[in-house]
Image (cartoon, rainbow, N blue to C red):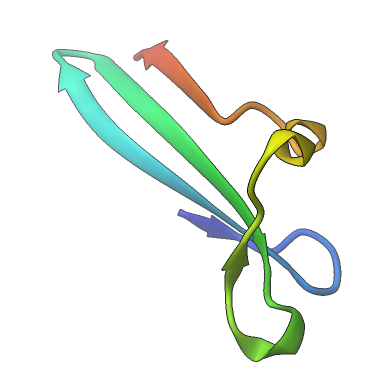
Length: 57
């Protein structure tokens, strides 16, 4: 899943089924500044939200 927060943002969420009714969600926060996706790295990504989560359906 891809979302576009703000004027130049692009965030990517990868959902992986791990067990019956259980999923792992990995978040990748980035920018489209300059027309190409660049993933943010390091401790500054915490301001955008969690980097991953495990959920049950």
